[in-house]
Length: 186
Image 1 (tube, rainbow, N blue to C red):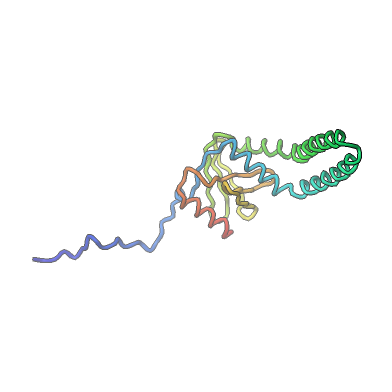
Image 2: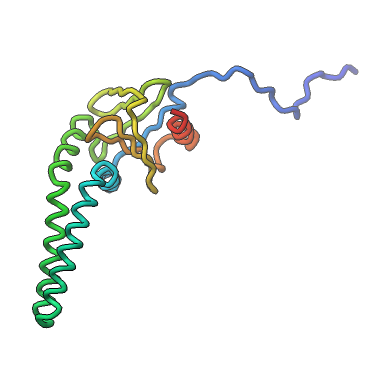
């Protein structure tokens, strides 16, 4: 009896050449309102940090002066001053970022990055590709800024525009990890 040279228990030999599949490297995701709010707040902290820092320091200084003044005027005046300073701090913070938020949201809408949109991102050697309900967009990879958050990656290809790629997405974990690795290598 002649033996069969093929062993069914032997592992399959892997090919040395890797076939490039653009769909395997593409990360698809669905945007939600909560993800966009998270990404917008992180974007504002990164891109308007000096404006927010100066505004915060000015609010702290004004609060210290107001509280010192109110401390010697009595409990009622101190309470009113406390509420007034908290209200003023909220209004000042909103004023610092209001115009930027309007411009950011307008650019997000024009690129199809709205709640409920299904988008995909791909990075080749020199460009970032975004496919959204509004079409296909491309940006040079060297102008791309990347920030990591606890919920995903914030990709900033142009001023006042961000693409948020969540950790939990419609693609495989391998595709997300490949995207992260390629962004680090750039």
